[in-house]
Length: 148
Image (cartoon, rainbow, N blue to C red):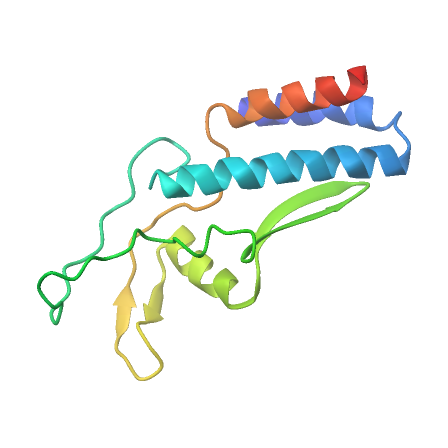
C-alpha cells in the first residue's frame, strides 16, 4: 500500500497542472489499462497478492463428463467490467447484477445459489485489487502521457 500512497502523492502534483480534458483522457487510459490487467488476472484465477483462487466446491448433482467453464468467464468481459472516469477520478467496477456477484466473491459473503436455493458461504476470491506490477504500470502510463 505504501507504493500506492507514494504514487498518489507524486501523480496528484503533476495532474493538477493538466487541463481537465487532458486529466480525464489520462485517467480513462489508466482505468482501461487497469481493467485489462484485472481481467487477465481473473482469467489466470489469481488474487492480487498472487495466490490462486480457492477452487469450486464439488457439486452433488454434477453429471459425469460435463465440462465446466472457468470461474468468472463472463464477469471479466467489458460488458460487465466497466470503466468510469472524470477529471478527478478513475474507477473500474462491475455493472448491474454482476456487481452483486462480484461483491459476494470479493469479500467472501453468504448468498443464495439461485432464487429458491439454499444460502452458501462463498470463498473469498479478490476480483479487483492492485497487484505487484500495477503501480509501476500506472507510473509508466502517466509518464508516457506527460511526455507526449
